[in-house]
Image (cartoon, rainbow, N blue to C red; front, side, top):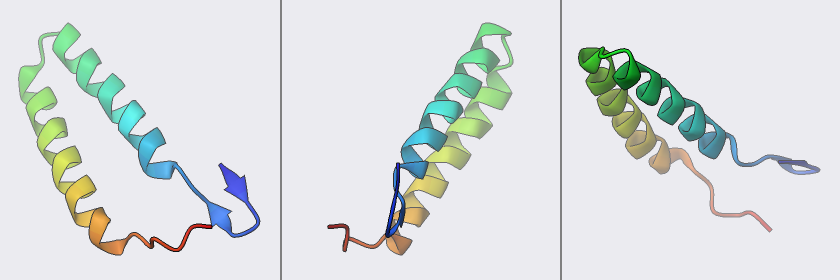
Length: 57
């Protein structure tokens, strides 16, 4: 969502795309890719929480 102070919800959108990519990997029986995507997504979302600002009005 774009507003005057910036853009919000990009992590949610990225999570939806990541979930789709993991689902496609599992559908094509590429479990190693699904595991790597899951681990990378988890780590990125955990690390990015340190950089989030809670000053949204």
